[in-house]
Image 1 (spheres, rainbow over the protein chains, first blue to last red):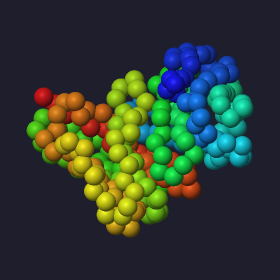
Image 2 (image 1 turned 90 degrees about the vertical axis):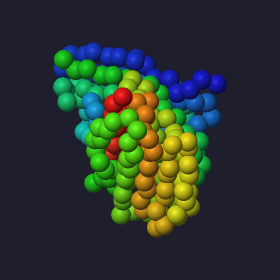
Image 3 (image 1 turned 180 degrees about the vertical axis):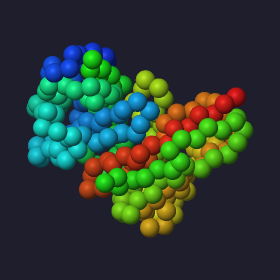
Length: 114
Length: 109
């Protein structure tokens, strides 16, 4: 079916507000990643979900960040009390749980905190 | 701690020049992937190398995996403006992909 879908594509929010970013992975992909990309920079790992295993949250920068994945499919990344330094593009990727498999990325959500 | 370091971080060259991008780590990976990201898009896979010493060619792009599976290189021959973008290496470790710091390439006509 379709590729990885992220929504919204753009989000402008006021400092201190909470935001939710959504990711719809490719059907059947059990692995899901969230990354953050600041302007002109590489990818910063945030969190990794694999099937029913406990997620790898080692990349979350603070306790204001959380993510969940419902039913092994859709994932939501929540940022509470947003700060200006949270402004970035948030990318979601999914893949099959298989060695050396390809990660498919969504187009990202551009978050701007004003 | 960044597991995968890429160099150079930025590269601006003229059309027709050759270039090499390096991806280095102290860790061993089961495979190494290279992605290219264009503005406003997510990264897209270019190639996966699996065997130590493996060399793969994709038109003007040559990818090599180090013998010890800790590093990789991407060589572009006769670069073109269409090669402009962010190049990312990614290592597979414990079935999770770890991305490098990225190399931003700009090719001027």
